[in-house]
Length: 336
Image 1 (cartoon, rainbow, N blue to C red):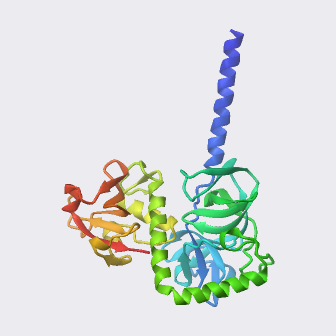
Image 2: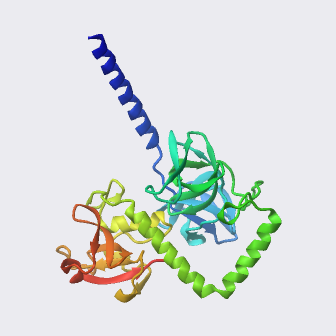
Image 3: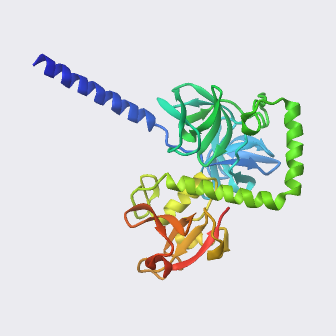
């Protein structure tokens, strides 16, 4: 009898511990969606999404912000450790690999440092609550970091920024790394930047093509993280997606803002032919249910004649050449 009681007590204790860990791990679900660069001589950070709300501070040209989400014509952002809103017209939104945001502190019980910005990639190390890693980049909802001699990725919602980025107005920090996390001095950084600018000028076309391809692959990788998530009419979060909610969410965490419905997303980006499809392009269909809308379904092209979409009962990958989708294909739009 006593051994039975001890066993039940152990089971109860383990259940409480597991429950506590789950609650701690899921305490923060605000995945940062993009990096924003101020494109104005002065841009106000406001308390709310409107010009009638309190001004918290002012950012200046080329300062960096971390974009959390879009609210109409406004972005909810973190600027110099303060959370507020900036008008979207004055921010250049981009996926940027090499931007030093300073140290980030782990806000969960235990987090994984991964080799790539996906939950399926190799775990290089683990960090406990309160430990810090130095942020040197951003990629589709993940921070690229340096930690204990390793370079890897940590999901952005699991790190809280602790200092003002050295490139921002009012910062007293100094750069610690450059491309690929190599230690640098201020002088070597300036020289490297000039060389990069010169190289970019002479290879603009090639660079643009490579950047578009890389961004498309990142979008596909982000989309695949949600394979199997249930289909929910009107859903636009990892708890459940409809088709356009899925595409909008994936593009948003990769730093791109698109409209909400399938038909409205036909206005985003620019048209590409079927033969020119690249990973990351949006593909559209009509007559998938009883509606006269120009587009009633949308997905993301993954390559090889396949696309990923929220359709049927869950997020899945389907073939464009299947009888059902081939006869309903409308066209494609490129966002990146």
